[in-house]
Image (cartoon, rainbow, N blue to C red; front, side, top):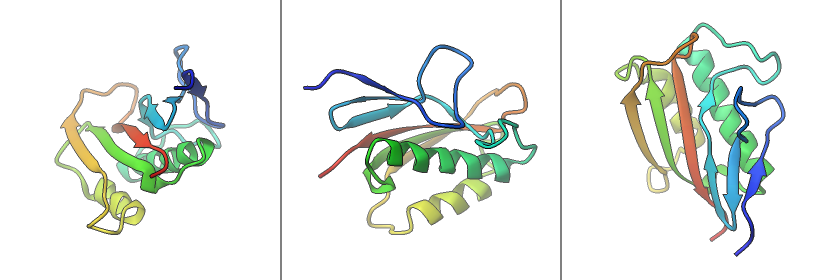
Amino acid sequence: MASRESIDLPGFGHANPIPAASRKGPFVFSGAFTGRDPQTGELPATLDEQVTHIFGHVRALMAAVGGTTDDVMKMTVWLADFRDRDALNREWLAMFPDPASRPARHVQHADLDRGLLVQADVVAVLGD
C-alpha cells in the first residue's frame, strides 16, 4: 500500500502543523473543517454561512484527491446548538440528494470557541 500523503487545500489551513486531510491508498480522512470563508479567511457570524463553507471545503477536498462527494462514507458534525440542524440538513440534501446513496452522519454537541458554530470531519474511500 502507498505511503501516507498530506493533503492541503488552498484557502483552508489549521493553526497547528497539520494538513487539511491525510490519504493512504483509497482512504481519505480529514481534519476538522471549520466554516471559515476560503477567500477571506474570515469566520461568518451565522450558522448558515459557516455550514455552506464547510460543505465547500468537503467538495474542494474531494476534488483535490481525485474523487467526488460520492466517495464520502461518513461525516461527523459538531454543533454549538446540536438541535439547530436546518442549515446542515439543507446542505446535506444538496450534496447527497439520493436517499438510497447517502453517507453515514453523526451530529453531536460541542463547546466550540472563537465564534465557531459548527465543525465537521469526513471519511472517504476513493473508487469502487
